[in-house]
Length: 354
Image 1: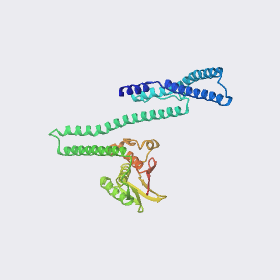
Image 2: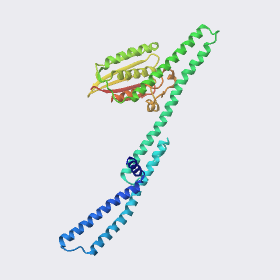
Image 3: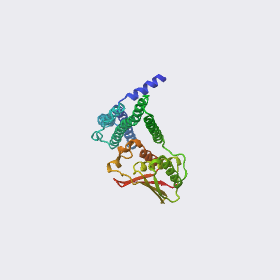
């Protein structure tokens, strides 16, 4: 019994949509014709109080047969108009499964509104997968490049250090360079892990009051220690402001923005930090007096591993602003950037107070 049931289910699954649609519609039409004939005969019996003429029965049978034949032909042709677009979408879906994201469903092949919407959504999916494939390839290329450079430097200097005749001063210098490249690798790995965690995080479960003013002051102290050699100055004009958010995420926000501002500033950086609260939102502005950005650089500044100024590649890895944008997405905040080449850059961040 179970085997027979499985065979029936399998057979139903293999029936083409056009035949299935035509048979079920024709069966419905047959039932409707039979009910109509029965009602006609019942009306004759009730109202004429006479036997049903043979001619009337014959005409009912002929009419039903003609209706079913003509209706069957029309239904079968109509089913082709629906099944053909479905076959096209099915074939293109199979191409997507094979990794071919260049396929699209022509709108002219989808005459029905619902099928046209299905085709448009399919094309949107195909385009999104295509872009994702390009992003993944670009990401892998960037990761390979970012890791390859410091590893090559470390390997090269390690080989030089094997020379026993190397002067002590040169040995110390090369060891320092190896240490710097190792720290760069560690920083890159930390940022990539951080970015990966943020990508997979969809909800912020830890929400509590965060004193933005105090947190920004602590981040400024941390940046002063990190960039001690450049002695950054912080011009803070900030009232006591509080938001409800994840403190770890907001700290990542300020650290990355301040680090970016110092990195692209002159030798003695001056970072201006202002804040205000209005309409249930806290606005933080971080402005530097650095080199600024061109319109082309501003368009790409949130791309992972993108660094508009190649002279600062040794000081970062191009993930800072990507992390900032992802943190703001999780916190339902917003960011705006104003920059002019040669006159500095200002980032404006808005966070909800509750």
